[in-house]
Image (tube, rainbow, N blue to C red; front, side):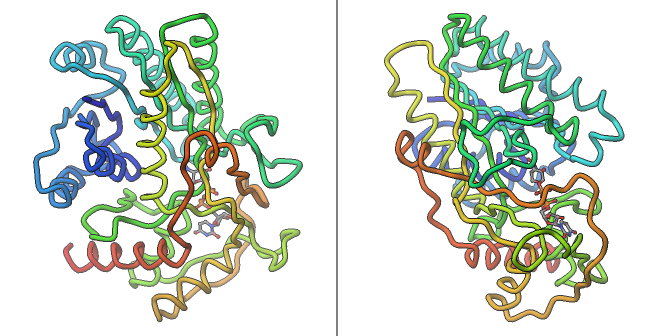
Length: 339
Ligand code: WQD
């Protein structure tokens, strides 16, 4: 079955393309390479040992997207393509609303026109804001997102939910990711932040590789055991496999009208300091870091309750934090040494 993977050259997208192919699907990538590189395609092909067909196109471009639907017999869509920098979204909300909402609306319209019924949407735990109780379940009330980026994820979830509830011929799953980290064990694909990374692990591995002078820990005065923020860090390959499981679940649904939301995390909360210490221990590397002020907009702690995805989708994370940090470091060394 052909699966259109928007944003398929990105961090999570590229890992999902690999897992889709290895599970017997035929992924077709569409990516405008605004936040990814063509070398991700080469990495995918290296792992799979075959070509990875892709379209260099913008998901907001109706002519281009219509051509893709015309030229293929798509059986399902995984929609990753989105602008995703939290900080940038605060400075440039229009870009985020136009890109993230526009591409989703266009996709939903074209799927209806071409009779494509299976959709997996890339959402985020950011829709929960700072939850009142932990771990968060799918029933935990979503809160006003701390950023326009987070708002676009919440609004797109609602687009999809309301379209299914209207009776459309659509089976859709929204996956709320926690913090994706790590890289494929081959080090052929991984996270390729453009410019200065805003996320913890790519910044940390760049600091450890000497690309950055040091890592700054954004605050250690939170109300947590060691004072640093707590997150649910999930290996990107485990997350990629959750998308395959979601598609398989949709394929097994008899009715043509279905909607569900799933948390996709490990279910474990890990602090920034615990992650740093684990990185140093598992890679035998001393990291230069210091504690600085809190980063505005950061929530104190969040981690997932994962019973629903375990029981309904039959998925659970298998890789450990050590695996994630070992794979992230191997990937960093690979890209540093092959610059
Ligand atoms: C994690 C922790 C920082 C950098 C965001 C989005 C989320 C998803 C993942 C897209 C925080 C601390 C970080 C650094 C640090 N993105 N940190 N020094 O903010 O939890 O989630 O990225 O889908 O939607 O909201 O991830 O990696 O930026 O931060 O101390 O140099 O690491 O304060 O506590 P975050 P992050």
